[in-house]
Structures are given as structure tokens and as C-alpha cells.
Length: 81
Image (cartoon, rainbow, N blue to C red):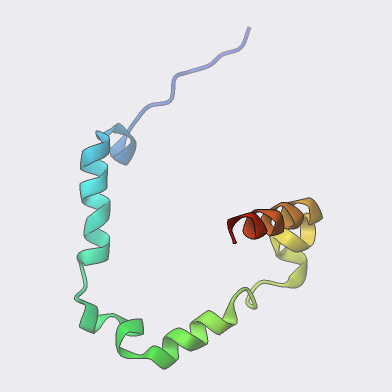
């Protein structure tokens, strides 16, 4: 006999979806645009963007581990174009 207990819904999980959305949306509005690093330092944004996945070793990247996953992603990308 399997001993299963229902998961308790605490915190965010227990709130109604509208309340969760309200709280989550505050994160993006907590800092004025002019004080956001990428807004004031476009060079910093460009540098961060160019790093892409370079901080993760090639052996740890999802696509290098799963060729089928990479293939499916490529197909999806072509379908949307």
C-alpha cells in the first residue's frame, strides 16, 4: 500500500491567481527605469548579451547533451519564421 499525503498549498501556491499576479508584477516596477543598470549602461547590456551561455561549460549545456532536443528547437524556430 502506498502512503501518499496530499501536498500542502502554502505561500504563493495557496493564493488565488489574481493575487499572485498582482504581487509578481510589483517586482518589475520596484525600481524606476532610470535606475536600472541596463537602462543607463547600454554597454553593460551588450556585454551581458554577448556572453550568452559562455559561463556554462560545453558539456553542461542542454543542447550539447541532447541532440534530439536541439533538433526539435531548431525545427520550431524555422516553423515560426
